[in-house]
Image 1 (cartoon, one colour):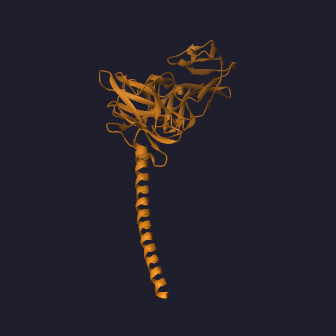
Image 2: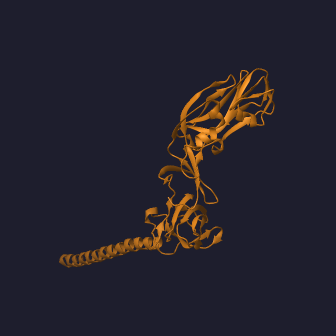
Length: 347
């Protein structure tokens, strides 16, 4: 009887072992299929058209348009129509030069979110060129690098901060809505000026250092937050006062019984509206280097008029005397920095 039970249990054990082997093999196959199918599905989700978006170019739903010869601005709007956040890349297949200068050409976008991008386009040919765009998207469970670049398309570069134009180095200061670009010279040019003659001829003297066609030296108007304030009331000076001749053309001056010499004048009685400067330089490019501003300036100090040229010294404002009402001339050694506006130009 004992042997009978032993034989029975041996058969049961063998059966259970065989069953476990079958279960383990089946589980291994199922797990392997699960891993393969999950990764495969993840890849398919990334690269198929299962994610969707709306695309506007210049406020019109379209994915392509013709750009005219020269430079132009395109306003791109991408709207996610997915229920989840995704990665995106803006791509183009055009052979014209395209730079992004405002907004992000790649990144993440939330469900229903809109992102806006400004593009600077340069068509160097003499005829209109077709420009097409697509947005490649991918699931947030992957990475931005996993988003596929569609065959025949390329990513759009951000605009360069520094360019070469007329064989000189320039910083891009501003891109205007008319598709022109304001450039500021990286280099400065040494200058030495002195006295009432330089005060009178400041514009020509400083501009002569800027040799690129259409360029000029930087003035107060190029610094958005630098303001010259003029008093409403006149200050009366009853003493012998000398002044550069250009000073008389200003409507802030009334002089009596004046005598004019070659390049300057003097009087025993003058009414002058005093000035002062308020400034905050926010443009980091304009904070770099030491250079003069092509703007005449004066202030009244202790019954005397001081005639200045304004100098920017790495973001700090310095007043440099050229002349004073005691008929004293001063010499200023500094630099000139140039600006130029370009359009329809490759770089």
